[in-house]
Image (tube, rainbow, N blue to C red):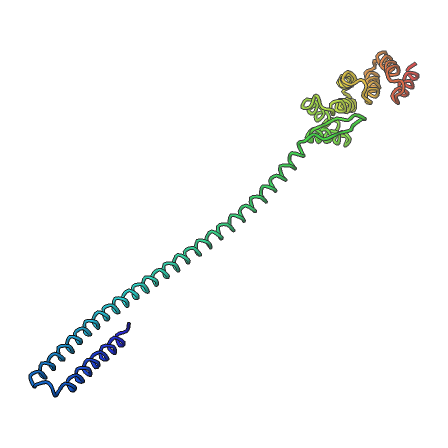
Length: 272
């Protein structure tokens, strides 16, 4: 209840008491003596004073209550303000943390993408390297076999030197190749071309050794008949006609359908 309303009610009550008192006094004036009139007035004053004190006490109580309520409201408002500021501070902190986490997440995503790209590139390089080391299928002189890329490259390099006319250099290359790859599918062709390189450099005895090694290694090889013919040619160069005749005869008997057999028959006829 407001202070103004309490005061209004108080003065209404005072006026009511006064009016009633005065009315009673006037109505009974004829019956009271002066002494009685004074007593009535004193009593009326006491009642008014009591009402005044009561009103003052009520006023003080109401004012204290209002002040207390105002203080409580102020405290509540202050606390609400503090809570609001605290909430705003926490919200800003959370926003900052979210922004930091988002930035870190974007950085991690970028690093992951870069790492995946690097791994892909490295894997591609590794696969290319492995493909160079994996055996490849080769068909040479009618024979199929598997060969390592390095092995294939070495044989082809030696053969290229031979066909370029550098027979001495090609001998060294073929000898080195046979030493490194004795079980290679290229070993038989390497013996054949080594023998031919030695024949070209007039190293007939070594040529005969290598041609015979070819025949002993793979007698069914398509170069075997040609190797026998080359042995006979080396023997003729060494003036060993008797051995040459035997070699040519063996060639005709072992490989009668070969082109080398036709050439051997012609050589035999010429030797007679």
